[in-house]
Image (cartoon, rainbow, N blue to C red; front, side):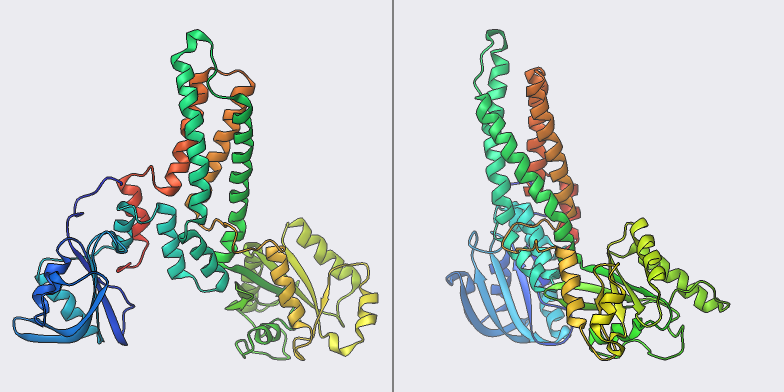
Length: 461
């Protein structure tokens, strides 16, 4: 159990459901006074004598005034979410009524919970480790199937179990290395060097694999920005509307219709793509507003995770397209070449015409031809067939940076043994490795660090 901060003994209360009007709202209490507080507001029966994990229907009253008819759920610690006595009050979803109930609980001795304080108490009581607690926030924020599965896998302890096993094995070897220091004059080895090198190799491989998954995890958690770039009237806005299946952008035969960037979100196979329709890029324009739009388009292209370069197959030359490809490569951008208005010529002739430039997807945004192929290409380009949401995938930047430190420590430990570095220095590297592993799961934390992590949660969770 971690060190407990000021306010730990308080009983806390908060609305656990979203703000706003709904059919019901749930208020949560946690702490040693929870049952006493609800009992003083629930005259129908003595709730302090009721069994855990039971439901009770009745009126809440304060000073003889009926607040609401509710369902009270009782969870006696340690068999509760927080590990403490927990009460959940399901009332009617009027914000006014719910606020009256919360105020009544405060009047009876509770205090308002801070953001994430229920989950923080679950962590401090050993119900969750820190990585699992952070996955709770990821699950609440998940908006795709992939992000839901990844967060749920980590809540179940998939990530933590891998680290826990690794840390325990390193601790055993660390103890043997420390023991060797006590007998340094005897020149004895308690730690089997062959097994140690095998462990270091396995640990390095595991850590590298987890760290490498962060790029994919970032995609799953935050989505992918896709800038649709091309010359005026290439069909960028039409493509955006087709992909979204709605008329989001103004479409016109007049070149330069889009003067600013338009951003929309598209879910493809569980991955969020933030599509950005940009102003058309041309070499010269005397229109000040259009010029500003072009500057924004170029900026979005540089910032995007993926660029769709859209061109009119009937207007562009091979040399012109090749120069675009060269520029995209020079900027080291991840891009897809999309030839639009392909319904106006046989596809075979287009492929022959552009045979020197591989990887082009020919579509007709207006006729909605081959746009599904483009969607598949977007997913393949981003994921590269690597997504397996049953695997452990890192989505948290804090975890990623700690893993980088673990990886460097493992390299330093190996180099230390190979270069016959004194045992006390190697022991320092092992301790550093264990420290960063412990930071991820919460074996090693500071109060400020915990407050920062849980402050990003919603109130009531």
